[in-house]
Length: 302
Image (cartoon, rainbow, N blue to C red; front, side, top):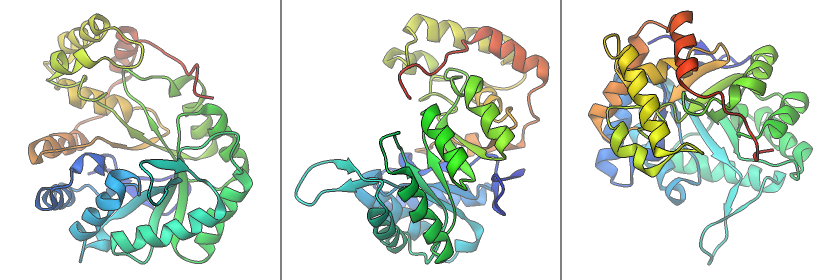
């Protein structure tokens, strides 16, 4: 599988990674999925302390035991669990980040994290303090690099200006082209990579589009979703299936280093990984996809 440099770091990530949120909590199945991902040439595993209250990190840790050097391990921080209460509170403070990293490393069974990401963020956060926490963790050797996971253009701009992030994780697909206008060009110019989540838009951009479109997506109507997927199938089905077209589209922008579709079955995982062996879309194919889809933009996420 082709590997791309992640921003200015010395991390090289496969074009296809694994979004671990979809692994579930059944240990045997989750471990099998992660190990199959490694066999398929996937090296970027993305998890978070938030997923299944830390259980996801534990399962990923068990799955990579003995193979730590084969993996670019990414996890996230910022959502703090309050003892005795349900749910989480947002906490981007330096004190919390520096304590939470130790808990994540313990669950993951590792003594360092390759990519530590802020799991959200707003302009009201103590951004300089948050950056200071990540910089200190780098200096202390607990993390190799840091990034943010955000779809807020104004927040992304602040971290581009004020920090040494190497990546931004964001939702990006044929159905969510919001990053194209103001975020992707900025990151490409700044030498910061995108890790694109949701490339198949919750399964709508797959062979299950009719079933998945019923639940809707962003501000599209069900009819709009079905119309777009039918047009895409009409134009591209003879070349590649819909999910592979969707994954290759997300990879077509020069800012994107890797996409991280989730997978809950081995067959699904293998199918996603196969997209890494396909040739890139041509400029003509990209233009056609953009003519069929909608150039939506960020309105509320600021």
